[in-house]
Every structure is written in structure tokens, then in C-alpha cells.
Image (cartoon, rainbow, N blue to C red; front, side, top):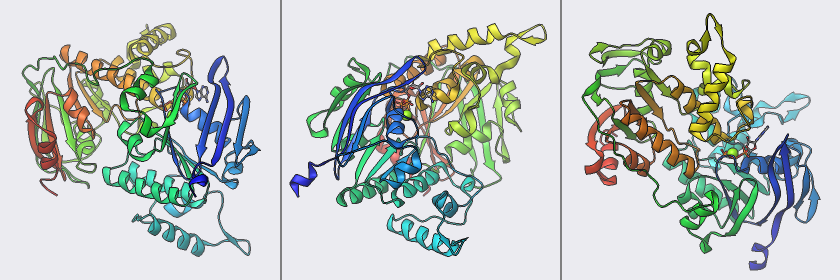
Length: 501
Ligand SMILES: Nc1ncnc2c1ncn2[C@@H]1O[C@H](COP(=O)(O)OP(=O)(O)OP(=O)(O)O)[C@@H](O)[C@H]1O
Ligand SMILES: [Mg+2]
């Protein structure tokens, strides 16, 4: 049995891939053992997703070989890969939002009985699958009614349902709750025990050390490290990823908040999930964190302030003026900005280039007379690319050609261009690598020093403790307390987040 564990089920040799002049993968090798989890790490744009898409047949590699159980394979497309035992959960969800859970599960492979789709069979299999995975899901519910994390779990369930030998998970936990992550890990351990191998892409170190047997690191299209997780540590991994060691994960928070400038008074929402009687002030030049468990109402609070969710009662004052916005446009016109957590649905125009996506929220700014000035827009975009260290060829790149983390940077750049006074961010560093995270933290602190007010939602305890001045903790739709970051502790935050459960 021990011998079998060392069996190589997948072997990638000398894989190369270029997009135009951009060589994204340069002679990559990787071996995955049967019944193990291989972690794959690397900075945004390092080539992780591309490598996995070449394996899965979404992209065709330019050079190299892929051996599955010693057999040379080259999948013509995802369908071919799935039929041959390789499944993949993509970084960006790609579901039919109008269709229900069962439909999405069987999309492209409906069971047919005498020429008609066998709905009964579909339902039965779907129910059985979710039961095995320990998930409760309403199978008749349209996808769009589900939270991002529920949808993600459905994608994972789908990949598992193919009975594959190899399952690739590309940043599957970026929007899962703590409980869902631990369920997913249980599931992964179960699959491992059945001899299935997993390739697990994540930017989260603690996850890699918890679940992976081996870990490989890509840097700029080169495989720079691959070894058993037991034989490495966090510092070595970071150094391999960024090519230098990073001593501190957070820059010094040295802004000085001024007078209260934003006042939220007795805010409640009309529709579920309900916010109840939320009252707090935020100061000019302050970084105010919002912590809470997923579902506590943090996103809803930002959306209500921003005018995209219906108030039942309550008031928002900015500089002592009533700001009960009824649309995002009103909020934007008054100097508010909101970076949402789901970038593909809310933040980007995937058919546009970087210039379009960077300047879209601020068109008036680039007028020359009555016409838009293209050079002005391109110049602004180049500047944001520089500020954010966005990895791309230039402003004319299509947004869809950027890696996931780099798309997030473009969203950031877009709002920076508007120079908002109140900058609200919902999980701004989700899916962003360690090096780029540090840059975003620096940027946030820099903005606060220039007198901008920042409200940031984060589920990551170290992050919320590392970059804020004060933290409001939400629990089940209510504000459970506000603490000074310097004087609080992880215990206190957890205690407060459970206050109204
Ligand atoms: N379809 C495409 N067309 C052109 N360039 C692409 C395309 N897909 C990826 N790239 C480029 O390939 C490089 C690697 O991207 P990839 O998505 O593989 O990165 P990643 O390691 O998955 O990053 P992240 O952590 O941000 O998800 C990037 O520079 C990206 O711009
Ligand atoms: Mg990726």
C-alpha cells in the first residue's frame, strides 16, 4: 500500500504556453502522487490557472507532455478531460444563474431515458451527492438566489460528481465560510482516502499547511519549488513566491484620524437579511474595520450606506448633511465608493479592455471639450497600472486576459481614479497574493493619511487587526460592539461576533 502512495498518477513535463508575446509557462514539470493533495502557490499572474487550464484542455499547451497513469494524454477540451478522469473547479464561477441547482449540476450531461431528460433521476442523484457531502441545498432554487459561497460549494460538488481521478480546485475557498472550509477539507480527506488526487490552488498559507501533502511554487512561469509540505515552512514558501523574504505582513498603521465625518444612525433594512438599528460614527482619515462571521450583515451594511439596498429606517450623515442615497449613482456623485466582493458580477466589464474598465466610473474626468479624450484615458490607466503593480502588457489588454488577482487590482484602480472621500471595501484582498496584499495595505494607509475615510470588511482576523484603527463587530444583523484595534484581541472579536447568535 505504501508503494502505491508513491505512485505518480499525473506527470507534467516541459509544459510551455504563451499568449502572443507573453510567455506564461516556461518548461514546467510537476508530479502528483496518487491519493495526495498537491498545493500550488504563486503570486497573481504567476501562471497557476493557465497551467491547470492547459491540463484540463481549456487551453492548448504549446510544448510539453502530460502523462496520466503513464499514458501520454492531450485533452481537446474540458469534456474530453472530464471523460478521462480529470475535473476542475474554476477560480471564477461560471454558472447559469437563472437555472436551478440540479440543472447546473448536470449541464451538458443530462441523463436521458427514451429520448427525454430523466428529471427524476437527476434529482435523485443530486440529492444523494449533497447528502454524501453533508450539504443542505434547495435543489429547485435558481442559482442567482444563492450566496457566492453556496454557489462555490455547488461547483465543488459538481467536480466531485464526475468520479474523477484528479480534481483541480482553483482557489475554491476564497468565498467560503470557516465552516464550509472545514467541510471541504473533510471532503478532500475522504477523496484522498479513495485514492483520488487533488491539486489545490490557494493564497492562504494556513490552508496549504493543513491540507496539502506536497506544495509547488510557480514564479513568473517557472516552477521554482516542489517538495513535501512537511519539509518546508511559511518563510521559505513566501521567499520562493516573491523571490525575496517578506519580514512583516503589515505596514505600520501611522495615520491620525480626525473629527467624525460620517454618521450612521439607527439604520435598518427592509428586506432580509435584516440589519437592525445600526449606529456608529467614522472619522476623517480613519480606517474603520467591519468584522463578523459570514452572513452577519457586513456586506449588507455597506450596500445600504451606498444606496443599493432598501432602508426601512435610519439616516446616514456625511459632513452633517443627510445622505440617504437611493442609488449607487447618487452615492458616487457624493464621493462614496464601494468595492464589492464578487468582482465578476459587479465590478468588471469582461468584454472591455483595461482602459475602459479603469475609466468607466469617472468618464467626466476625461473629457476634452465635449468629446472623450482617449489619450487622457490611456494615460490615467497607465498610471493606475503602475500604482497597483498590475501584471499586464498594457492598457489595451482585455480585462479577461488578466489573472484573477490582477483583475481585482484593476477594480481598485478604477475607484482610485475617482478619488472618493469615503472608500468602502468588501474583502479587498480576497484572491490577492502576499506581496500585492502588502501593497494594497500600504495604499489604504496612504489614502487615510491623505484624509480619506476607509471602511473595510474583512473575514481575515490578522488583516482586520493589522490595518485598522477601530473595528466594528457585527453579529446577526446588529452591531455587537466597537473596539480600538490596539486594545482588542482575537478573543474579544470572536466573542462579540457571537453576541446575537
Ligand atoms: N486568455 C488569456 N489571454 C492572454 N493572456 C492571458 C490569458 N490568460 C492568462 N493570461 C496571462 O497569463 C499570466 C498568468 O495568468 P494566470 O491566470 O495563470 O495567473 P494565476 O497564477 O492564476 O494568478 P491569480 O493568483 O491572480 O489567479 C498573466 O500574466 C495573464 O495576464
Ligand atoms: Mg488564477
